Structures are given as structure tokens and as C-alpha cells.
Image 1 (cartoon, rainbow, N blue to C red):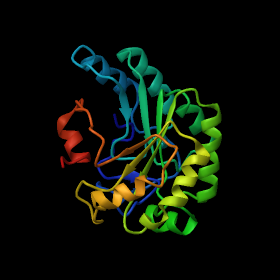
Image 2 (image 1 turned 30 degrees about the horizontal axis):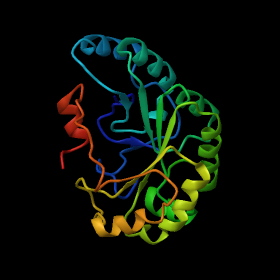
Image 3 (image 1 turned 120 degrees about the horizontal axis):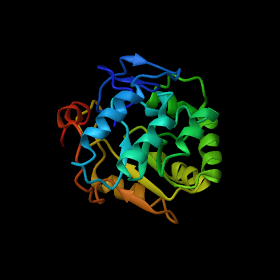
Amino acid sequence: MDLVSTEGKTCSFDCIYCQLGRTIYPQVERREFVTMTQLTRELEEVKNNVVADYVTFSGMAEPTLASNLGEAIRIAKSILSVPVAILTNSSLMPREDVCSDLAQADVVVAKIDAANEHMFRQINNPVVGYSFDQILYSIEDFRKSFKGKLDLQMMFISINKNYASQMADIARQISPDEVQLNTPLRPCPVKPLTPEAMAIIKNEFTGLRVVNVYQGLKPEVMPLNLEETLRRRPKL
């Protein structure tokens, strides 16, 4: 589900590998994009036709930009009676109100693509004013109090592939339930790493539960709106 739902990409990052293209609307302030009346109506319309393991908030934007994220999580759980997952780029996690909203989810998947500040700016092109270290500390703090499942998602490309050891150390410091090692397989300006390169990277993450994008079998996902989903995430 997309709580921002703008025509062009609205994000606090402008990642060089993003399958959705460049960020059209750079955004750092939280606000309401989709009303809870709209969300409730759409969920009520589909609740009897959907069998789901999770409701996932992602889309054409960073979901934590939606100031009503916490309320949306509560509504989704109430209507669909399934766990809620949030995919976040982690950019706003230094904010207390954002972490309070995320804490209501059952699964939070937080992104880390860099090993240091320079790489963070090179890969993620952040709009937010928070430093790389501030974001890392906020994820660590969130982990300590979060009662759900926290996963880390790391995208590896040529820029950061030689820093897998340092990124593995960061992951160990956070101690997530799972680390998802990705490389961009959908169409984008950046070439993916080979399966062999990703296997070498995975070897650095000893002691952690790891899923490699080339090895993990992904379950079939049923979108609520197929046309909108394909616009956001073209098929491989």
C-alpha cells in the first residue's frame, strides 16, 4: 500500500539505483497525502477478496513521510486482521514520531546501503539533514525497544561491494532478525552484481541470518491494484 501515492516519485532520498527513477518531489517534512477515509474505503472494498500473509506499506515514496502512518497501520490491522510490514529507507528514523509510528508495525525493513558518510551521499543522495551516523544510531535505538521483527535491507552495487565487511559489522552492531542482501535486478541505471560477487559478499555476514537476492525464493505477491503495482515495480 502506498500512503503517499503521488504521480512522480516523492522521497527523502534520490538513490542512484532506484527502479522508480529520479526523485521528482524531494520531501523531508511529514504530511498527510492519503486520507484515512480513502484508505478505509479501499480496504473495506477488498477485504473479502484478499488472502494475505502481510500488508506492506511501500510504493512510489518513502512511507514514513506520511504523517498518518501510525493511524494507517492500526486501520489496516483492524480491517484485514493480518500483520503489517513497513519498508523504509531509514532516513527519518532519527525522529521520535516516526519511530513511534513504526513501532506499531509487526515487521520493519530498514535500509542501509553504505559504510560511511561519503558513500551514503554518493549512493543515496539524501535530502534529509541527518548524517549517516545519526541514522545508524536511530536504527540501533529502535531495535532495542521494538517488539516486532526488524530486518535490514542492503543494496550492493559496484560502489560499495568492497565494503561488505564494514557493512556486515554495522549489521552485527544493530543485530537484526534478518539481513537481505540485494543488487538491482529490475531495470535501472546501475548494473547489478553477479551471483558470484553476491556470494562473496554473503560470506562476510557470518553469524547473521542472511537472504541473498539470488538465492531467496520470493513468494507470489498479490497486489490490490495490479496496474499501479506494475507502474511502481516493473516485472523482472
